[in-house]
Length: 118
Image 1 (cartoon, rainbow, N blue to C red):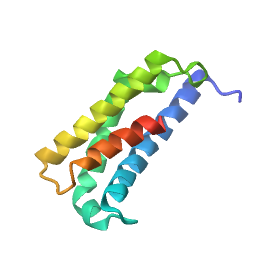
Image 2 (cartoon, one colour):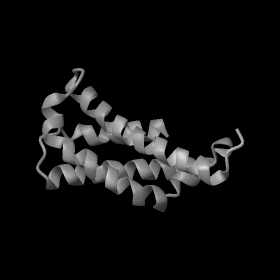
Image 3 (cartoon, one colour):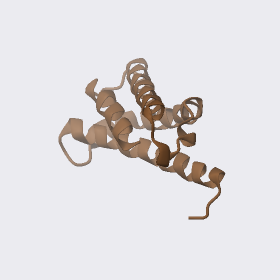
Image 4 (cartoon, rainbow, N blue to C red):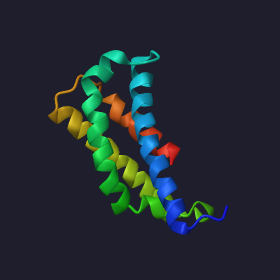
């Protein structure tokens, strides 16, 4: 493709950031069993913002943008798995602390979607 390593890393980082939003929305949709989960989203919009802010330092800490897709080895899968677990726990913690009405299964579905999407 001719892109530099840093450009590829930035593209990967941005696509993961978008995936985070899509995964959280999908978790709410799957849990509510309807198309757009309007009831939950009205109250839980802050969760999207806070998880987006948490994503940046967590992705850098787990070196998610540095994973080489051509050499996807066990350590990379482990890092992505731990990253998904930490994001899922952060979603649980934030939902509890902010007293959101979101069901507890939403962060679990979200974690699975993040792991599967990466």
